[in-house]
Length: 79
Image (cartoon, rainbow, N blue to C red; front, side):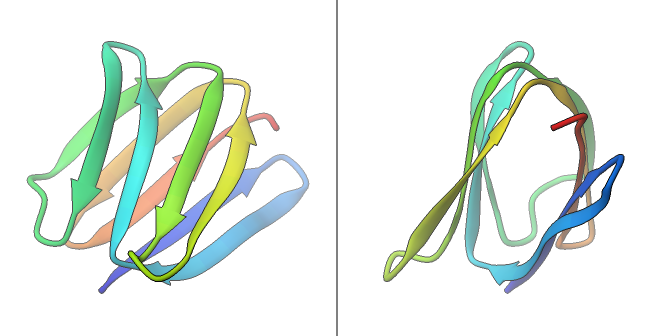
């Protein structure tokens, strides 16, 4: 499992244990699975889809950035 945290100026919007995360990256959409290589990427307007095969949830973002490191995914967004 991985830890996903989505942070906005108003505080933490999402904090969840997930198996996969789909992100709207600045260079194109991409998926993060367990043990993904560390990365930092910009995000464009779109949906973050996260969860497991049994249940996926969505969170709409207007842009921002993401940091992936050691099975922890932190998204900073204005929305």
